[in-house]
Amino acid sequence: KDILRARVLSSGEPYARLIFAYRQLVHEHVLPKLAAVLGEGEFAVQREPSLRFSLPEASALGAREGDDDGCIGLHTDGDYDHQPGELNVMLALSRVFGSNGLFVESEPMAGDYHCVDLEPGRLFTFHGVACRHYNQRNETGCSRVSIDFRVIPMSKYDRSRDAVERKATRAGRFTLGEYFELIDVKPEGG
Image (cartoon, rainbow, N blue to C red):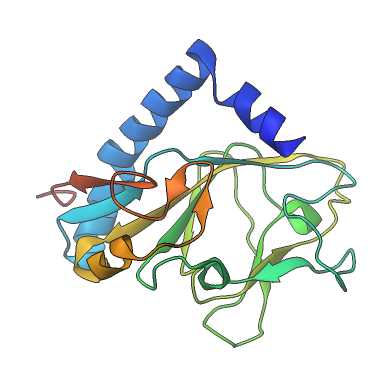
């Protein structure tokens, strides 16, 4: 079911326009800000973003054994073999609040989860490879829709991991040329 939905959503002219808009957003807004803050000029950027939907009475993450409606899919992206230098970026396309939100700890193993509240068009960045995060059963009556993607400053990209056979997603292995593309950028105001 999810594979079919992914194929439907990632085909045709509407998807091509979405990818064009995504790349424009990343090149013109996200990376210049990150470059200025981090003092970096090169980034590995997820080639195709993840479209996330948290529909009413459901969750954007799949439940694991032992999950309850208040904590669904607790994990770090490191659990799935993502690189330690990755930053997660979430762009809200709808209002993100309450149980339709993403719950993230402030630092690794802190356990102090807070709900990410965002208005449409706002970005949230976090270190999802190390900080645990989860969803709840969406009881807000409102769907959450977001575009989520990952960015790695090239100074933190571990090229030795490219040669290791690892898990792959529909978008490929977590390597440059498959899951990520290399982008040079000038810092905002630079």
